[in-house]
Image 1 (cartoon, rainbow, N blue to C red):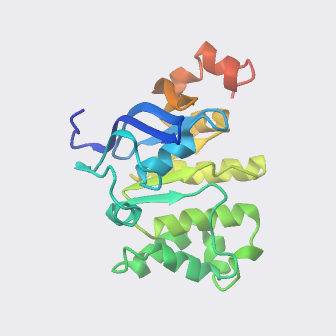
Image 2 (cartoon, rainbow, N blue to C red):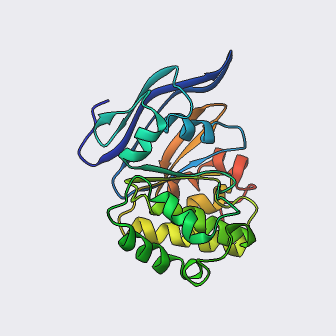
Length: 243
C-alpha cells in the first residue's frame, strides 16, 4: 500500500494477538488529512485494540503502520506520540489530584515551544476549562473531564487525534456537545479517528466509518451510505435508519 501525500495514516494487514487469541486480523485502512473517521462496532470488536496497536502499546504480530509517510510499526509509544499521534483514552485518563492547568501542561510534554498558543486554543474551544483552570480535575463532571481529556490531547498539537469511546457514561446532550466540538475541529483541519459504540451518533458526525467485528473490518464507506446499509441498520441502529 503506497501512501499518498494526503494520507496521514496508512495501515496494511495489521494483526495482533493476546497469546493464542487473535484480537486484530489483517486490518487495513487509510485516513487522509482533515478527515473525521469513525471506528464502529460492539464492545470487544477490536476498536480499542486497533488504536492501542497503532500507538505501539500493543506490539503488532503482523502488518504495517505508516504515519505521515514513515513506517512506525514497532516504534516505542513515546516516539509515536512525539511524532504527532495523540490518544484520548477510554475512561479519559486524567490525573484527578492535579488541577486542570497541570493536566493540560502534561499534554504539551512533546511540544513545549507553543504552549501559550496551544492553551489559548484549548481555552477558546473549552471556555469552562479556562474558568476553572485551578480546580482539581477529579472534581469536574464527567462531561468536563472528557473536555479536559480532549484539551490535553490538543496541547500536543496532534497531526492525528484518536479518541476511544468519548461518549461513555455521558448524558445524550453532552454526547452531542462533544461530537459537535469534534466536528468543528475537523472542519478546521484536524484529522480525527473516533472509536465509538454509539453508532448512530458516530455516523451522524464522521465523514467515513469502518465497521469492526471480532477483530476485523467487515464494512467500510461514507457514513451516509452505512446509515442506509441493511446490516448496519439491523445490528446497530435498532432496525431504523432515522437519526
